[in-house]
Image 1: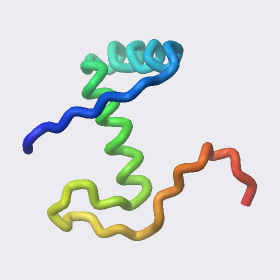
Image 2: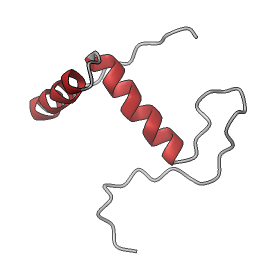
Image 3: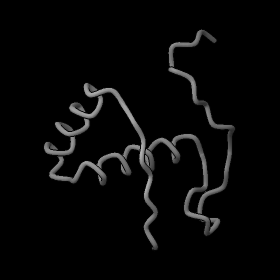
Image 4: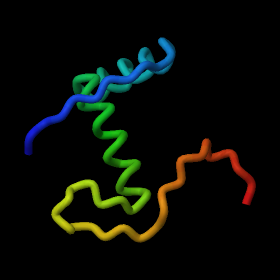
Length: 69
């Protein structure tokens, strides 16, 4: 699979937390962020592979998780 680059800005505290997490998992920061994004996409039922392996079952929810139902 060909790799693509994504650059984004975040709070220093978030970067530091991700660095700690990546060290605990013996991963690079980039690999850790990718793992988090892939997990989120899969939880949302989003077919990110592009090969039709997983069907989209629901709409993505991008809220903070604190919304009341």
